[in-house]
Length: 134
View: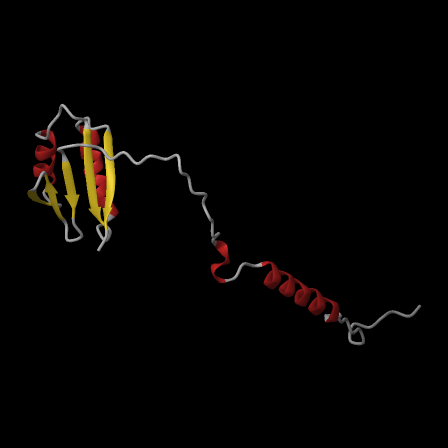
């Protein structure tokens, strides 16, 4: 009986098929991946002619500027002085529950949301939001 000597044994793995499979996987993932701005959809929304724009007629107006200044019925406030803003909202005309909230296009969203929270806290349910463009 002839035994195989450990020194004479050559064990090898063919990697040529492995390279082919890896190359095919790379091609598959490159072809199926999204590149650049293709993640966004351009939608052409339909126009309606039956919509009527009815602005809120209100004496309560709040203007938020991009520098952090707030005008409540033409009275100046700083955005960092929340207590004074809350007092001014509390003292606004309560018989009309509508408020016009105008925000500059470069003002921070957190300022607008903070003022909306204060308005909601004091019972102003109808808030019309406008954007002031440059």
